[in-house]
Amino acid sequence: DIQMTQSPSSLSASVGDRVTITCQASQDIKNYLNWYQQRPGKAPQLLIYDASFLQTGVPSRFSGSGSGTDFTLTINSLQPEDFATYYCQQYGDLVCSFGQGTKLEIK
Amino acid sequence: QVQLVESGGGVVQPGRSLRLSCAPSGFTFSNYAMHWVRQAPGKGLEWVALIWYDGSNKKYVDSVKGRFTISRDNSENSLYLQMNSLRVEDTAVYYCVRDPLYCTSTSCHFRMDVWGQGTTVTVSS
Image (tube, rainbow over all chains, first blue to last red; front, side, top):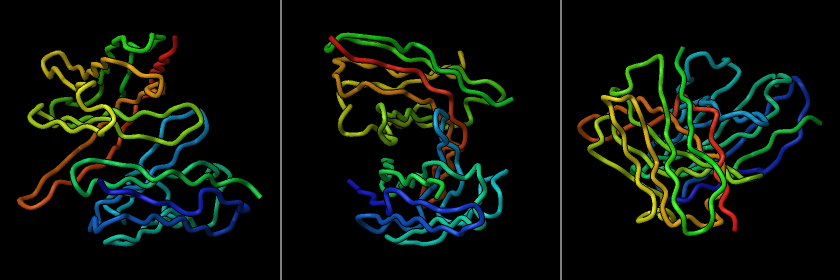
């Protein structure tokens, strides 16, 4: 099974900052990688699919990059509503799995 | 609007069974693959199961294989998760999730683009 390792597990930042979250796969998954945001008490929302494609309706300050085993989610100019938990998710072998999550908190 | 509504959660003893349902609306259900994803209290997301748009293919996380069965009835616009031999560690919020899955000759591409609000399953004696 493919394992996903996200880092950091938590992160403190301020409104207006630029932050980067990384996700590493245990084997080559090409670009079969999605990113989700989950606000407290809410269902997750899709942000980025296939590593770098912005889901419709998601602000352009979110971007994704990477392929193979190493992937990055970048959020430019953090807004108050961006403080949430972020998950990567792979589907490299038709069986999905999520990273353990990164909690983004206000500094 | 596009919506997924889960039902069927509750409190159940270890070893017993429960069936979750998901009612989609606002889109053509039979055009989409569907997932169940769960989240234990205070924990991260765990993918549970996937079913192709026509039910022809199903996948499961190892921890539920042989105990859980995902199914769908496109004529009734419903998705199900039959959970047998429940364990304490199955306690979680269970989300029904839509996927506009598309496949080429060489690969399939998944993305979970619409999520329900979840139904809570508690396994406890």
